[in-house]
Amino acid sequence: MKPRREALFWLTARPIAHRGLHDSSRGVVENSLGAARAAFAANYAMECDLRLSRDGKVFVFHDDGLDRLCGETGLFRDLDAAQAQRKVLLGSGETILPFERLLGVAQSAVPLIVELKSDFSGDVALAAAVAATLRDYPGPVAVKSFDPDLIVALRRIDAPWPLGIVAQAEYGQEEWAGLSDAQRFALSRFTHAGETRPDFLSWRAGDLPNPTCEFARACAGTPVLSWTIRSAQQAERVKAHADQIIFEGFLA
Image (cartoon, rainbow, N blue to C red; front, side, top):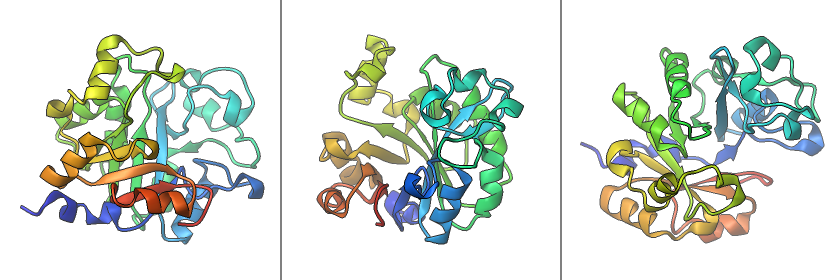
């Protein structure tokens, strides 16, 4: 068997555009078709976020709420697919992007690293929907999530794509207030590793170097992606501790 880092060379071979190669000053917004096309044209890999509509369709969208990206009240999960496809992304003429549409445009040309968003409720429907959407896609794809339950669900169906965990050193910030103490402990101490068995890690740049990453890289050859890199100087600082960067705001 090839060492894990060698087998996943395609995942780390080129910089990864965070939510596509977006530039709001030019009307190209995050997780949009325009951002995807810009990333593909520049020969970058692309990272994007996935959420599930009320009727079970997968869309490329980061936030739980609609306010920042669409200027509207409400939650993404309350939209059905038809409603989601009519929501305009602020600063652009584009609407929220269906995942199937992204796959059609990617056409297997460059790697996609897709992050499954979660409210940590135990609902793993998104994992099943993403697996179904990817079933016949021949291109290079890796799937990751902060939520171990989603990755475990994919492990249980023997998903053929590399599966990764997105992580940071601690989870005390307000955005993690909904986690139980047990969930916070599992995430910070990585006690889920026996079940998730991550093929790669996606780690917050400000928390590198990190003992979990150093151990995984040295002992298991596990690739580490570092997010979110916003300058060439920051990229230089993390390169000793990560195998590739997930970047935005500059050309890597």
